[in-house]
Image: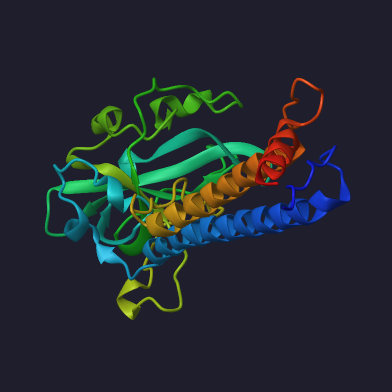
Length: 284
């Protein structure tokens, strides 16, 4: 009768090299597959964000009403606004940098045609209120990224020498505090003027967008992807990483069992061998 092999003396023993290698290959493969699925999940979210941010512009009134709360799933969506400028309501939002310089956003309300409400449009950036171009007048048509109104902050004076601009300099585009600057209702949002995209229709081409003499600004916030976008790939990633953990556990159990010394009998010999010797003697 053949006795079982003796346990190896160390985890570094050559008989275990194959087990170590198999564990490393399996763990590396499952971790890599998990990272790949995780990347695919994020790519799906990025694709959805890009699709919304560069979607065909829709009229603002089709996205939200003048008295509606801001639709959270529409942040960064291109919207088309058409109406008449209200130059007296122009404000300069402090604390915005451009090319490493501190300055202001120039924002003017645009009263939408066919309605009794206006929306603030960020026309561009200026380093100084005093050197900013005059606010636009007349009718206009432009496309911009839709953004929620900022949180309430106190109106501030310009810290760089434009204090004589008075209450035209504000700390934020807080819609509630801007009501005093206009004679009509305001949307609970503002629009950041966007560059015209080649795939947008001709109706989205800007007309008197008020950006002359101002530097471009970027939309401060991008759209948010749906919570379920890329969820399946994310769960696949977790599944692969759980496989990696399971592979390490199996390897650890195997190595532990193989390297565990056999229990000794009363005579100092391994119990297994002593039992088998007795079995052979009894057969004889």
